[in-house]
Length: 186
Ligand SMILES: [Zn+2]
Ligand SMILES: [Zn+2]
Image 1 (tube, rainbow, N blue to C red):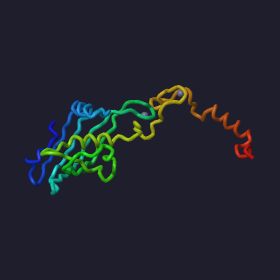
Image 2: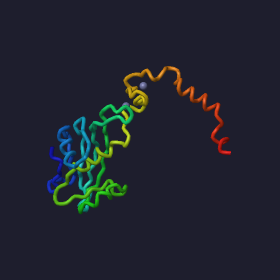
Image 3: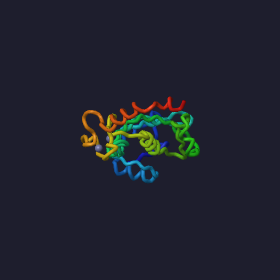
Image 4: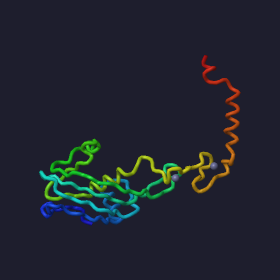
């Protein structure tokens, strides 16, 4: 879908873009940015674009989609739900160096040139930033058994008896019989 706003057609009260970007289009657009993001649901929501005076424009709204990712503990693929508020000020001028985008005071500013504003880059940025460094399929995902690699989310394995771990209990006993670390150092 067309995600550009033609500024000479923008009424003083602004306009609202009803978003409906298909999974395929998100992924094609992301591939063009070299962003390793795979959408799992269409991008929906609405973005309001309105003049803010002095050739500045505010884009604000809320977007929803889902991103296909993998659980950091059990490694199973799952869809990370995304619901992000968007508030960005478009200011006329040259885009700055990429690293400056990470500074908090410039995070919500985007540069535009000419008579059009493309809202896709800010949507893409919100999608990319919505993914945390660690993604868990659920908060208490038990992950994989360190011994046999069984996904404990799909059932217990035989390495883990119901009452404690005999090997670990044995180690604890052994440790109690040894002099403690601090005594040894003296
Ligand atoms: Zn998991
Ligand atoms: Zn196991």
